[in-house]
Image (cartoon, rainbow, N blue to C red):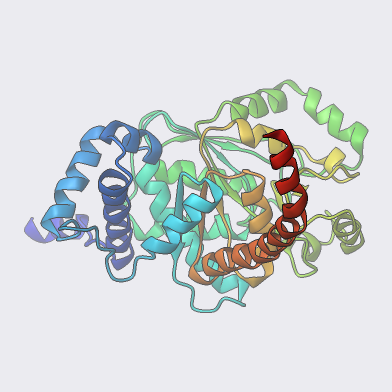
Length: 364
C-alpha cells in the first residue's frame, strides 16, 4: 500500500521548483519594494490572499527576504521587473533558452514556462480562451509533467476556427480539448474554418447561431493564452499551403505588418492592419482580446522579436512569457531607440534657449 501511495504522488519537477522560486521573488518584491498591499498583489497575480500570505512567509523562511529582496539563482527577476515597468505588464515570465535562433527550441522552452504559469493562475470556473500554434502546443504538452487537475467549472474556449488539418495536434480545437481534459473542465469548440474562402463566406459562418454563441462566450472570458506569430515563409500557415500564401503575407508586410495574434496582423505599434485576410478570419479580433482582463502572450526567439515588441507597444497582452535573450533585446532596443530621441531633444532645447530667455525677460 505504501508503494502505491508513493507512485500516486510524483515528486515535484525542477521546473515546478523554479516557477515557485520565481513567484516567491516576484511577490516579495511587490510587497516589500513596491509596497503593494496583499489584496492588490492577489488581484494582480490571480492568487488568493491566503496564498500571498503563505508565499511571503515562505520567502522569509527561504531567506529571500532579509534586509533586501534577493533573487534566487536561475530566476531573471531584474529583467522581469524591467519589462513589467517598461511595458506596463502585470507580469513577465522569463525562461532560459538553449538556442535563441532555433524557433522550435524556443517554442518548446517558453511553452514549458507558460504551462507552469497556467497552473499557477487558473482558478475553478475560469473561462479560458485559447488561440493556436506551435507555442501553445508546447504549453499544452508541457502540462504532461504535472498530475491532472480537477478544477470545477473550467471552460476552455476555442478562439479561432480550424487553421490546419483537424488531425494535426496544432489544430485549435484539439488544443482546447486537451487543455480542458487536463484541467477537468469542458471544451467549447468553434465549428468553422479559421480562414473562410471570402468575406461573404466568413459572414455566413458568423451568422451561424453556434458560431456566434462560441465567439460571444469567448469575448467574456476571464483569461486568454495566445501565441504571437510573425509573417515568415517557414511558418505553419505557409507550410500548410491551403490557408495563406506567402504572397499574401508579403503584401501584409508591405503594409507594415510585423506580427499577429489569432491571425489578426498588427504593425510596430500594435495597430490592426486591414486586409483581405482579416476580412476572412473566423475568430476573435484584437479589440476582443483587449477586452479580456488577462491576456497571456507566449513567444520568443530571434524571428519574433519585432512581433513581440509590437504586441507590447500596442498593449495587446497583459503577461508575457518569453526567453531570456528576447527579454534582454527588448530592453536593449528600447534604450537604443531612446538615445536618438534624447539627442534630438537636447539639440532642440539648445536651439530654442536664446529665444526662450528673451521671452522670459519680456514677460517679466
